Length: 164
Ligand SMILES: [Cu+2]
Image (cartoon, rainbow, N blue to C red; front, side, top):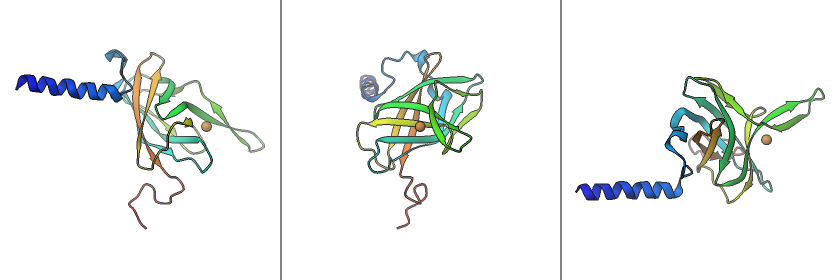
């Protein structure tokens, strides 16, 4: 029985490992749940567009500031943190941010018209309801897994029950 148990554990580990991002990441570089995203969503792109936007609240569960330096996902060629700059004439321009700082035991909100994640070069179709993994890395090379859900922002009741 012990052998079977060991076999199962190895099997599960190997299966997880095959799909995981954290493959090859040393345990001390796996940030676990120290950083998470609350209500993380990725909007499906308008027809003809290959750029997706993501929102949510990054939550730092540690008592030290966390500075995120990069983001990546298996589904997109490029993932960037963007901010918005508004000119006096009222035009808005996106700017690629080199880092996002989430205060100790605090949160950083990403939302429409402000900070957001931008996903470029979609490698396959994404479906509303699907969960997509984003790996982010901080300034100490520690990695955190963020789970974001695909929604269709043009569907009026995307986050409630179905009402046809
Ligand atoms: Cu952007």
